[in-house]
Image (tube, rainbow, N blue to C red; front, side, top):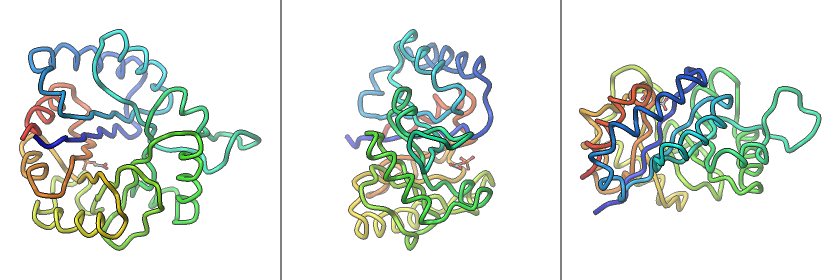
Length: 225
Ligand code: PGA
């Protein structure tokens, strides 16, 4: 059986109390199907403000969820007002998403700053989920998961075809040596199987479909191939 990785990206959406009740609902809904999670890695990326509460809730409800931060400072500890650095994140999460197209677009993050972020993450022991919009975009060395996310598919209800997504991640794997690759862009419970059953795609990165616990649990169950 293929090991599947699912990364739920909540973006700038949930308050702390909503994040906590999501974990409670997920725990309840997944109960009858828990065995199926053995072949999966489930990672949720909430806002910084919800990480601490999520960490506690995951312990309380004993759910096999790992946490990711959606962003990280390109600097270490120090006089960088408003930034959250890798060492601080490492206390609360195991992963960090770097290079998401929304960071590239709205915050003008380029290859130089993204590489600095990867360096910071790696030196603090965080695992990196690195997003790229195509097979040609630079991927810094040492990232753990590469997410292929075509910009036109994000939040639009339009997905890449599984065949093309598979071909793109295959190129990315060959070019970068990445061991895990996921596809993101309008992944929902109805189409998840078509992506994870391809030869090379190891998982998915849903945004919208990870927000509602019921929809997310359906997506997770349909990813068991
Ligand atoms: P979407 O978002 O699933 O809502 O398209 C994916 C992402 O931006 O990571």
